Length: 289
Image (cartoon, one colour):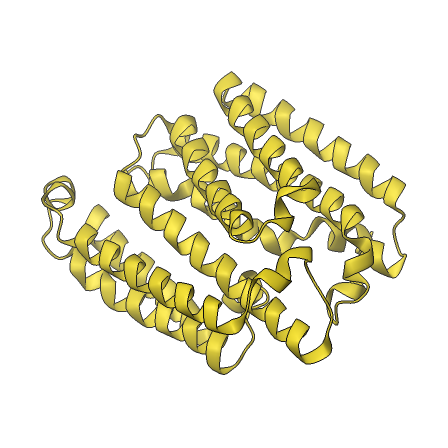
């Protein structure tokens, strides 16, 4: 059971919290019905994500065995066979689609289907193309937002979509930087496309992405539409947490060189946790009180 849980990577389910963003920013966080369907959507995406991770680990088993950390994954270490992983994956995907169909409807099933297809193509082919790979990852986060919007019938703000895409792009690029460091230090290719990246290039586009993200967020906080919708001119206070959080992540990426897992950073770094908590509390005070 321990190895099955490791195979499912439950810590990665944190990414699916983006499903709740339409609910949160729509001021419907305490609407029980919307909260329940968002939770069902969250569970569906968690099951789908774990199912795809199983396939990904089967596909990448050889390269994972060369990685200093990924070599301990259940399939790479031999604790779970590829056949068992594929069976688990199919079971999870079927469960996910069933839950989505029963709780939300065919629209959510369609979003899940698109997510599955894109990620299967990513695992089997697209991940070898530099830059395209990180854009596909970012699109996956947009699909989570759309799923949350469909489940609750809350329209998505273009600001939320744009900032989510940019943030996901930044995290994916930071992760690629960690792979480049391993390649340069140990000569091990964690990804086939890693030779198409290098540190100067990644540092440049990471800096651009962070800059655009912060400018976009500031524009969001001063937007007349946002101010009128929230009935508050004080949204810009939340930018303090965003700027500090982004700078801290840059520090982890460039100075400490530990950007291999965004999820682990969120779970372990106290300053980033405080920034996220402060940002959420600030928005709750503005939107709900």
